[in-house]
Amino acid sequence: METVVSGIRPTGHLHLGNYFGALKNFIKMQEEHNCYFFIADYHSLTTHPTPEDLHSNIKQVLVEYLAAGIDPEKATIYIQSDLPETAELYLLLNMNAYKGELERCTSFKDMVRKYPDNINAGLLTYPVLMAADVIIHRASKVPVGKDQEQHLEMIRNFASRFNRLYNIDFFPEPYAFNFGDNLVKVPGLDGSGKMGKSEGDKNSVNLADEPDDIRKKVMKAKTDSGPTKDNQTKPDEIQNLFTLMELVSDKSTVKHFDEAYNNCSIRYGDFKKQLAEDMVTFTEPFREKIKELAADNDLITKIAKMGAEKAKESGVTTVKEAREIMGIRNL
Ligand code: ADP
Picture: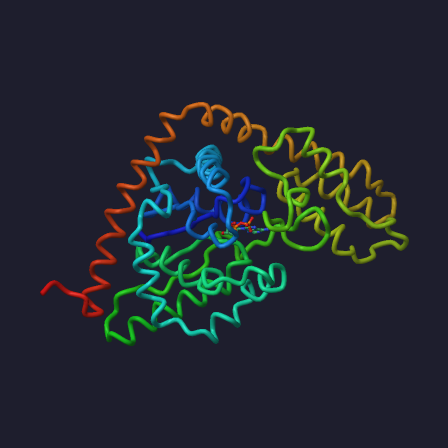
């Protein structure tokens, strides 16, 4: 049995990228492994949400992940700040994380480009906090999308550096995991690459979206003027829509539109209508369950409390041992 950790920032709704990139694998793994899923509220502070937004988003994300299939009896689902030892481990790891390697991190460079007025230390040390989240449970597998590959490499560096420095085999080196051969990257609707919360709400399809919102978003997705030659290569924005269709539609539907594209008879209106309807059908059971759970405050509070207790069982011990290894011991 392996230990598995995955997480999400409470900064918006759970979208198809989160689901297919990470959650789907986590849900499968909870059947056989020792699985921890955390809601990364400390992480989300880098962008300064209002306290009210942060508070309500934490509950919303908890509800959405439970609705999507995390079973609190099988896996531990908890709020990151309910395990404050994470912050202590982050401090300990920061002593051996170097400015150069942190500055070279692609996601840091992206944030510097996007938000030049808010380049805070939390952003720079984001991979260190992420390392603390993962190694606090001494996890070996992290189900994540392709966007997290570089962070995982950094986590392995921090873990192995600790082991080398203290001459001990304490932290395992964790790997990004997907049941398929490759890590998944779910494209967004605007043709520019990744579906994601920071890419804007119009770009993502959320499990909680109402059917009409999904239809509107998909019908507005970027397309070109259509193929002019048989079997021509699809431009990115069209390929992205096909990639999304492969996730939510039957094989025969994908085949039908692929053939229509290849013989230039495709009508993008019909293609997008079909994609939207298949997304509506795919998300329907989640949508219903989200509404049901969101109305049951007592249950949500109970699950959060249970998760916090289970997370502490493993996290407190790791940090206590890490301190001792480093020389912070009782006199
Ligand atoms: P977001 O990118 O929407 O802000 P997070 O960064 O909080 O979401 O990521 C939560 C999890 O979802 C991570 O494991 C990440 O790899 C995965 N994920 C997010 N977007 C995608 C995507 N477009 N394709 C694949 N996986 C994704």
